[in-house]
Image (spheres, rainbow, N blue to C red):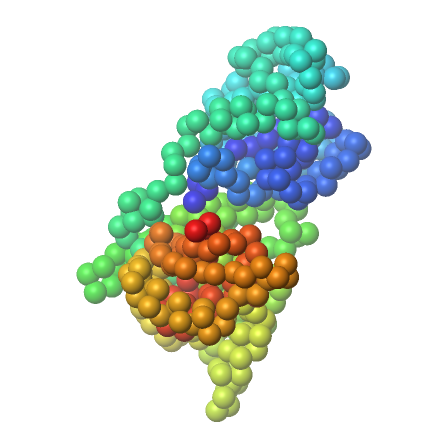
Length: 436
């Protein structure tokens, strides 16, 4: 997945958010002509020509401002520079060079990070002449684009991603099972890791957000090694105000991307909250195996069906992700902690599972004939062939005469049918439809 990070920096109002949105093809950042409108840092996964990367949109970088708000933006932009593998330093062809541009260029030269000087708002060939003055920044050849209309964006993305290797199977990177321990602050992530490895490697306190950086530990069980990534607590976006919190969120996302299975810790005493569901969704979007670990179960007064009732309530909240299993544990007493690793290992194996093509077709085609896809256009849709094209994460391809007409509810039917026959517990599935 997206291990390579590209950070966009520059003074206010040069078009960083427009550039960010152009890359993603969405409107995730608020774009406005008022300087300083991007208050929170935005980060998202992007892909270009089969190469994945994480893009960070920062607020306007004002190096020597005494304004508290601009100081916070500066600190977070500096953190983005520190975390990034390469930098897009954006300047404005219309307003030309400014003293702030020279200050930022000086900071970048000291950082020793790979930097790309991008001149935005070059909307046509006549404007190309306006890029020449930016050689004075001493950062090499200026690269001209127009984020608002997409001019030369493809050429620039080719350059930005030239150092990124194509996505590879995770098994080629590390034969050990990498487990990311993720969740809201103070749900017991560090306590969970500590009891597994038998030593206090993480600082465990009652103060939310104590763990700032991911900490890797190696846990051995039955002769097998597991890498445990104890991540910083994810907070709601509105509460990520400190620079160090922003840093932690980025590191946590990187930790999710490094893992094969995410252990999402939930606090049993608080129940499942909206932020828990967002964290689960973060792991699902990255196609990781997921296990929900309900911690602090020792603090819950129990009746005959307490766990079952909790699980049913959780299933309702999960919606289409009911394939994610749940385990109830106590990091304080050690209850069922070892079982968590066993289930995570099973999910890992499910994620690597490959279903033979003949088996897929023999099982699924009769089900498709019994419940055939419908089309709002009235065209008859026929699915003629099915094959699994990838594992870890699993991708299953359906060959049909009308791939664009397959509706979302039928995609869900197919996914549920696959799970009914072949399992894939805790594993997000990707279904693709190709022209036959």
